[in-house]
Length: 309
Image 1 (cartoon, one colour):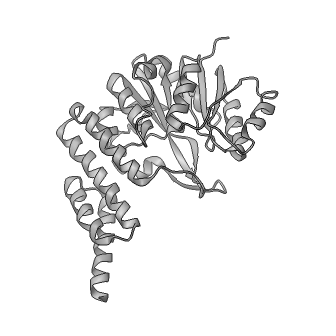
Image 2: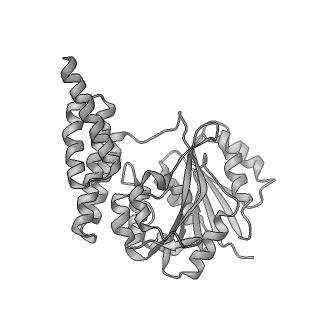
Image 3: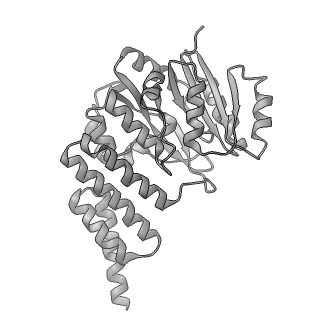
């Protein structure tokens, strides 16, 4: 039978998590798939483990390359993929058993849908739930048809996703032809190449989503994260790329979101006097509960400091 879905798993020193991730793929029901694990120069024995695993998992393909970053890794795997659809899974995340079947059914019946995603749960290192993604973005509730079952269409996806990136990469399925059309992930970005890719896809087609939690995202204490300033620089670059495609209200919201992230950055550095005016500006531009809480926190800290002084 032909391959319907190519599952792409980038790996860099994630040997301890590969079995759980790959098992969650193998357990997927009613789909024909291949698993492409592309290793980005691991030194923890991952490749040797994967080579042994091929004897058990016949769907597994291994691609090796020298360390070059996750955007390049995903791009190389996309080039090698043969499925009509591509699903992404990070090596330390994992899926529920029916995730792909439901997603594939929706996208096959919606020809214009180029991308779909699901809700997901943040879990700690003992796999205890913390909070689901959609709950972190209360403004997303306005987009949800509570009477709908399964997947539904996201209205005005480019406008919404430019200021609220609710998409977890390990929840995503895309049309292979569509992601190749938009030239895959931009490796020139030092961060957020996934967000940029989803926005490029939202430019050319429909986006579907499900409220069902179909993926768990592991919050690792030792995970490698992009430098915060790289992330902020990438956010500014990405918003500048798409600002002409959205309405003025969305531009304000997107700029406010960037300011929120800058305020959070300065807050973490202990620079309360820099955080406060930025948080205030973000709230004026786009008032909502989350940035109000942050603003009140900054005001309280600033007043406490001034009183104690």
